Amino acid sequence: MTIILDGKALRDKLLGDLKVKIDKSEIKPGLSVILVGNDSASQIYVNNKRKTAEKLGIKSEVIEYPADVEENVILDKINELNQDDSVHAILVQLPLPEHINKLKIIDAISPQKDVDCFTTINYGKLAAGLEPAVYPCTPKGILLLLDEYNIDLDGKHVVVVGRSNLVGKPMSLMALKRNATVTTCHSHTKNLKSITKTADVVISAVGEVLIEEDMINENIIVVDVGISRDKNGKIRGDVNFETVCGKTSYISPVPGGVGPMTIASLMLNTYELFEKSLKRS
Amino acid sequence: MTIILDGKALRDKLLGDLKVKIDKSEIKPGLSVILVGNDSASQIYVNNKRKTAEKLGIKSEVIEYPADVEENVILDKINELNQDDSVHAILVQLPLPEHINKLKIIDAISPQKDVDCFTTINYGKLAAGLEPAVYPCTPKGILLLLDEYNIDLDGKHVVVVGRSNLVGKPMSLMALKRNATVTTCHSHTKNLKSITKTADVVISAVGEVLIEEDMINENIIVVDVGISRDKNGKIRGDVNFETVCGKTSYISPVPGGVGPMTIASLMLNTYELFEKSLKRS
Image 1 (spheres, rainbow over the protein chains, first blue to last red):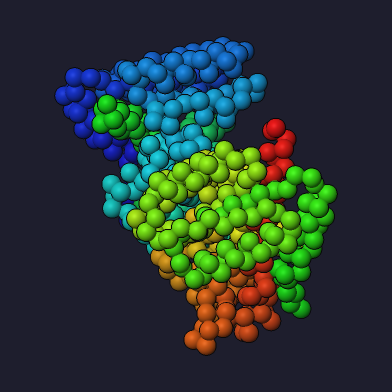
Image 2: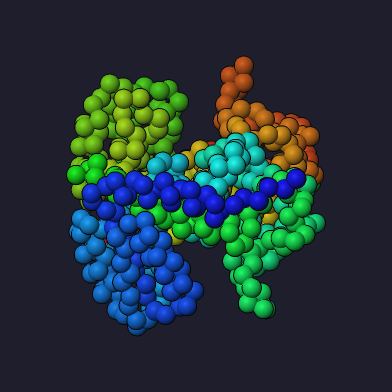
C-alpha cells in the first residue's frame, strides 16, 4: 500500500502550532524579503511567502527593486536590515540579475538573520555537521515530512538527484548527518537508473520529469522536489506520478508535497531566528 | 594489468618543482604548526612536515604546548601568527585535548592563512563549490595523484568510505565538483559490499582493513587513505592489498600512496597562500 506524504496537512499543522506561539508573543517576528526584477515565478513565490507570514502574525515586508538596480543599493538595504532589531530574518529571492554579485549580496546578510542558510559561514557549519543558525528551507521541510511519517534515514541508501547549492547538496549533507548512505546524482551521472535501482529513498530535485517506473525497486520512498509545467500548463514534478506511485511505500505528490513544506520551513526558521535573537538580548 | 598510483614519485616531482620556485624567491614562505600535547602519532606527523618544509626552504616553526595548556594561550598565539607577515600558513595539528574548544581555535585562524581548509568560511566555500583559500590537503593530494595518471572522475561513480570532516566529506564534495556521481558510506552503511560493487572508484578513509577482494568489481580504481598498524606493528591501509591489487586497474599502496601526497599538498598549499599574500600586498 502506498502512503502519500501529505505536505499540505503537515504544513497546516505546523503553522497552526506556530500561530499559537506567535499570538502569545508581545513582540512579533519580522521577515524581510528582497526581490529584484520581475521574474514571474519569483513574484508568485514571494507573494505566497508574504501572505503566509501575514496570516501567522509575522511582520513581513517585501522590498522590490527593478532588474537594473545597482548592487550597492541592495547592499545598503541589507546593512540597514542587519541593524534593524525588528527584522529577525532576511531572504534574498533568487535568481538575481546577471550584473549583481550574488555571493557578495548573500554574504552581506548577517548569519544570525540568514533564514535559508545561504551565507558561506552557515553553509560551512552545515557541511561540517555543526549547527547553522537555521537549516535550509527545502531540505529541512523534506526531513520534517519524513519525520512526520516516522521514516528514519539511519542506514538507508538515499539517492539525491540534483546537486544545487539550494536543495540537492544540502539535502545530501543533511541526510548524511542523519546517518544515511548518500549518493548524489546529477547531469553527468551515467545510467541514473542503475543508481536509483539501489535506493531505499529517492529524492529528486531537478525540474524535469525523469523518474520513471522502471527506475526504482518496489516499496521504496520517493520524494519529489521538482516543479515544472507540462505543455498544458499543469504543474508537475520530477516523478512520473501515475506509474511510479503504486510501486512505492511512500511518495510525495506535486503539488502538495515538498512545496508547502518549504514555505512552512521558512516560517519556522523565521521564528527560530526570532527566538534566538530574544535569547541574545 | 594493475598500475600502482605512486605517491612518493609524484611527491618528489611536485616538491622538486616547488623547491626551484622557492629557491628563486627572495622572500620565503612561512608555515607555523601548532602542536598541543604529546600524542606520538601527531609528533611524528608534525616532525615530517617540518623536515619536508625545511628541505624546500620554507620557513617552518613548530609551536608546542603541553596537554593542559589554556585555550586563551593558543588563541593569543594564533592572533599573533595572523598578524605576522612572515607567516603565510597556519596549521593546528589535530586532535586537540578535550578541554579545548576545537572549533573556536580553528576559526581563530585567518581564512587567508588556513592551510588545510579547516575554517568554517573556507569549508563553506568548498561545500558551495566556490574557491576556498586552498583545498584540504588529503583530498587535494588524492586528486593530484589521479590527475597524474590521467584518471578523469567526470561521470564516474566514486564511492567514498568515511565521512570525516578532514577527509571523507571534503573528498566527496571535491569529487562531486569534478562531476563524479558520489556515494558516501560510513559506519551506519548497511551492506557496504553492495555499494562498493557498483563503484568505478573506491576511496577508503577509515583506518581499519575493510576492503576485501570480493567487494569490488574488476578493473576499478582503488585509493587507500587509511593508515593503521597490524599486530606486528606494520603499517597498512584500509585495503587488503595482496588480494585486491590484481583485480584493480589502478591502486594506491600504503605506505607510499596518499600519505606522501598529503604532505606534498601541505607544501603546495603553503606556497599558494604565500603567493596570494604577495598579490594582496
